[in-house]
Image 1: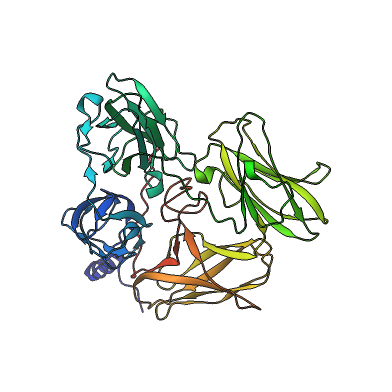
Image 2 (image 1 turned 120 degrees about the vertical axis):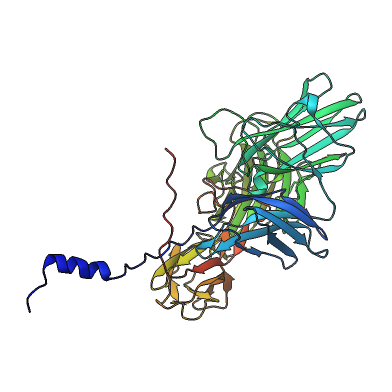
Length: 513
């Protein structure tokens, strides 16, 4: 058959209707913070979400049935309704669309309404009055160079305690507190509380007067700009109290507790705990104990975890003074040391605590716990969410933490998957530190958004675990470069699974140079 002339072919092609290109899906919501971060049980509060929202309104997930976020017409605006019986404390919220879910972010539920920051309050002359103490204030360092000032009266001999919660609610601000008197003279300052980057300031007055507390911060993660940070996401909760400073409770000792001055002459057998102070530069605190050959022991020091400035190390020495093992930073305990050690012979040993920075003082306190090892296991999912397009697959990576001598093969599976979506079981031998689960969606898979669980069991035992996603990790994907070392909620169970509708995803936004 002869081919039609090119002109006729062009006419025929022009009559064929064009195939419409599929609209790209919107980008998943990017949620950074809510302002104000505190809402009241039994009330409705207007809040604004900081972040990027490609299509409005999103679907909302919360970790409690009594917390309901109703989107307003304006992007980023919500009415938050809190049931009267909702448990006070931190709660998590995700925003969701067809392309995925945001990382979870904080809302703090309280029984009493806090005092709201009122701008302008950038300098002491325009400081916001605080009518009475104690008080809880919600604020935001909303612009570069922002300093929030709060003024109040203190009596002679009265102790002020000021606690700023910013890092612990995933705010990208490394906060600081500065207290000045009526003359404008600085009388107290704090940048880090010893446990995390949030400040804790305590000050006892010599005379009655008017004082002003200044709240400001620097960018987190830190950058090359030396200036005060501010952004829509730099929210905080400021708690002001008077009286004795609050203390952080240490973990249980699982045995008798000895204060350094009361330490027994005879060396105890684990488990036990001992409390002490590194009072001067280069000082070492020695704690003798007895052990039997083959005993597997854990030696843990709590210092930074309790707000102490002590950068501790711990050493085990034998009866001749020879060093057998040492640690200054535990793998999962941040700046505080933790080590596992097996006694090579029956005898008396010495646990020694010192300061890596070779400093001391009455505030350089610590708690040493010596106990028998308890084999245990943790499974950590590397990301908060997993997105699958129909006809494709995605991976869920799980870190396997075998602690204190835990051994054995493990079998992992994904539970709670929607119809047609599948994931095969995966077995990890006793030496593996990570496993990968592959989740597959057929080409006709229906859209889905919801939590699924990664469960693990011992291949030859009764142990059962559910993997969690760590919000506090500094190395996993928790929504902020360098992450957070300490949060009011440290992890979430399971992983958020999104099966997208058909169609291409939106192109990622270009990074600014």
